[in-house]
Length: 98
Ligand SMILES: [Zn+2]
Image 1: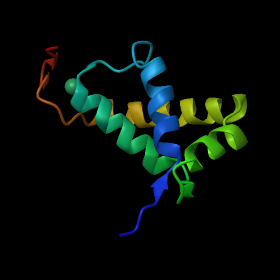
Image 2 (image 1 turned 180 degrees about the vertical axis):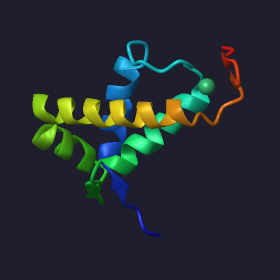
Image 3 (image 1 turned 120 degrees about the horizontal axis):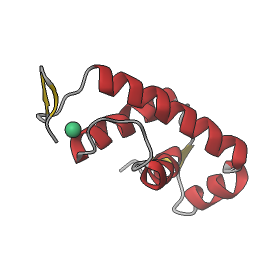
Image 4 (image 1 turned 180 degrees about the horizontal axis):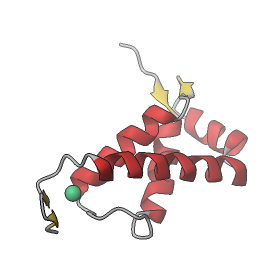
């Protein structure tokens, strides 16, 4: 059993959760949030860790203001892309129905 995790995942989730209500996304449903989360992760180089404490290590090592800002930029890019091509049912031709 291979047990590696992308330590960026909980960091990006944290930044996304903290900022989700402020993010310029027309629809705030779970589907759209997950789409933004997935896309942002695809835009951010992963840091794989193999230990349970790997996340804490990466967070302590790299999670500074600069990284926080970089993650927010990628979340912004992801939000733009998702809002251009939303996958959720709240979107109709007329706009958001949420
Ligand atoms: Zn939605």
